[in-house]
Length: 74
Image (cartoon, rainbow, N blue to C red; front, top):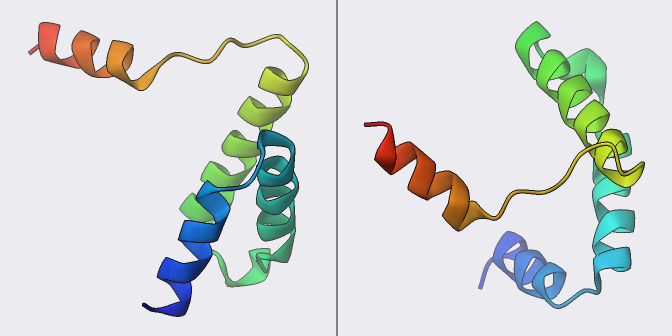
């Protein structure tokens, strides 16, 4: 098992609070000077969406609902 696979396996077993801490740490560890303009824009958008979710301004949508909508709109 690769280091990445092992890390993913361990991450799947974390509590939601632990996952939040892990995600925050990973995002903070990214060196934005090495990211291209598109990556920086997506990173900023992801952080903004996450903050809206944490503040209760945004509701999560189950993946199955999203996939069903995509299938229905083909």
